Image 1 (cartoon, rainbow, N blue to C red):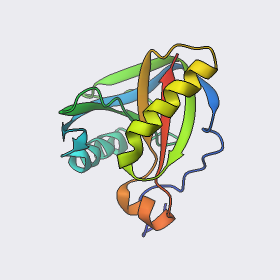
Image 2 (cartoon, helix red, strand yellow):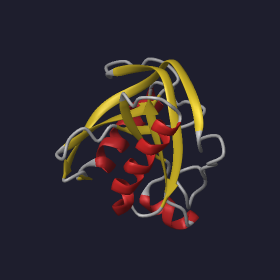
Image 3 (spheres, one colour):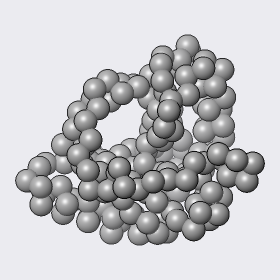
Length: 155
């Protein structure tokens, strides 16, 4: 990170078409409000929670922010933490995930989901839950010239 970019530059190689196993990986969990999957308060929710994580000295080595996009009107967000954070809801994710990296405008998300479903089936697996890993804020994505989104399919 530097003064001009708040998000680290994303390296897609460890995430593209990989099988990832997590055992009780801790995430601070919160909820954002959306309108037709367009987040309305994502920035304020992130700012609040990043401050809570920093105050608890719980920043992880790699900042991973997931969303489950479970409703047209809101989504659960999962912010990776290095340890439990006082007075915060912590969720531990465990399991095996297939990951695939996509790049482009968010309007392509429907096509990405369809492609991810095909990828999971091509591996002979069944998708249990889908998570979206937004690798950079819009400002940093514009600066880097890439809008990477990783889809993680829990299998």
